[in-house]
Length: 238
Length: 105
Image (cartoon, rainbow over all chains, first blue to last red; front, side, top):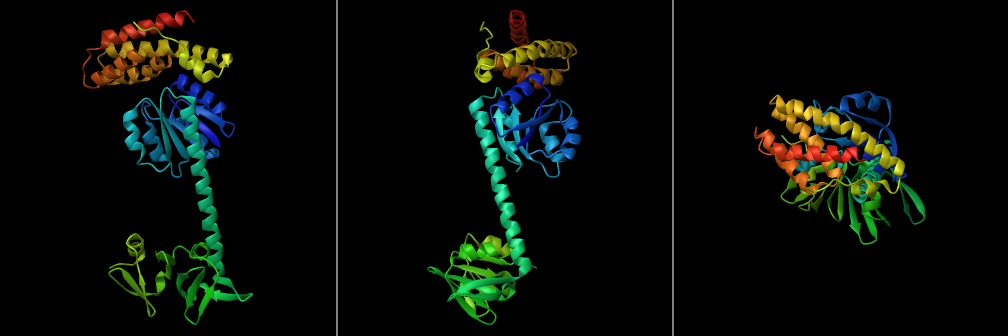
């Protein structure tokens, strides 16, 4: 991971550089005595991680984060334990290190940043996969050694049935040896939603919703309590 | 009074004496500047800025293993934010202690 260090104290910057040298995966690109000086560098270089001091004159670490459109991962380095709660307000803040920083704690924070970077990469790859599927708008399923084409927009319901799934479309139903998880990964998140552990529905095909169930075509599908908020969010409510 | 030490610096250097010397040189260079700024702001009655200076000096106090002194610095920083200078004598003793220690390095 490419990283930079921002701290108004030279001693603190030297310490973080030394701590970074203990971790092979970290590549320190530069260090800066204030956040403003780092901005041009951030615009011109790919930075994965920032070690950022909070308490700096004129422009605090939190002020700086608010100026970033797509902030990289940030590990705060500070003598102020009282700001830890504020740090939770920012998704980009991975960890909060109180000075003087010890190597084991530092390593733990970097591991956390690496794991978060990995999770983000996996999420991006899954999204890309879904985008490809949705542009194709078709899905091939294996039934009796034949690959059968299904138009994805025609699917209105998928039901888990043991080791099989039942795919219901406008014209026909298909029983396929697969799992809900596998087919979910092939479908667009914006159209299909898991409303129950056994059901994925096409949100565009909903006819009505009553209490804890939805009517879709002629099927009444249960909606679990945990999935209801997401379903309500998807609806164009008046 | 507790005495400054290099335990933290040794623990994080992993035996890299070049780094230890470099860090000590940075501290010897930076500390007098921070101390001077502290006195300047304190004598001018700029207690908010003095609190910022104490905040920055706190890190060096902790690096040099001065645990009790660190607690005094934390309390003094909070006092200054309330316009209270009660712990200034104690804090200035800490600064003198560090100044004397750095001359021995």
